[in-house]
Image (tube, rainbow, N blue to C red; front, side, top):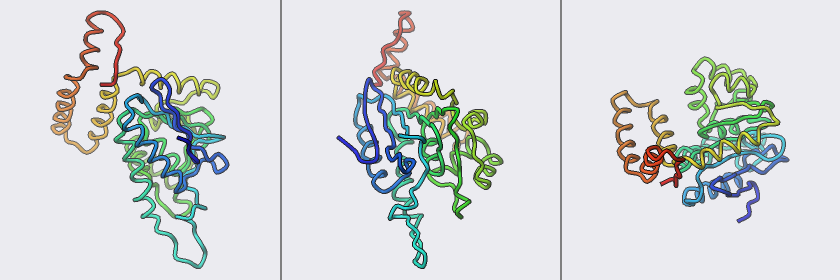
Length: 265
């Protein structure tokens, strides 16, 4: 199936979803949201997919919301559009879909990831960025707040002081500093970027998929759980995974001193 605002392919268990509005720095519009929903729903039901790599076409990852899109366009003299409605209908479901996706997710960031584009990258499990990439939260400069989960994601990863600094000043954060702060998984030289993303995707695609997703779920839950609640969550996931085909394969391979062949089940 062909799309107008994204590119999508699956090969060897790796799904590659590429934002494809390069003339608009891959900024979001209503059509892109609709196509992203459709692709993520396909991944959710396609058992051949073992990992998702999310990237951007052209010279950058994503510049955030396209302010020229009809749903958010500001017309002087008229009542401004309801931005909260746009967040509720588009951005909230997008982040929740990624958080609940049945496979691990990798954001491959080159160039600029700004506004909701930065938020989208950070909503993925792992972020790999080229050294030339940068992250920008410019919301305050137009009288808004970080959205698309950004106020939660950034604060959880780098702490309140740094999160407030990034959000209030609109400071452009380099990929290297983002990695140093713990905002992203890794920053790599531009010449090694594509290979690093592929190597990571191949590694994740060969691993026990359900265990990776339950790891995400457990760690996200930890932010709101007490220690006792978290221990119970861990026990529930261990009970489930301890009866999975991949656990049997993993232990068998260990005992037989061979490489495991995981199926994601």
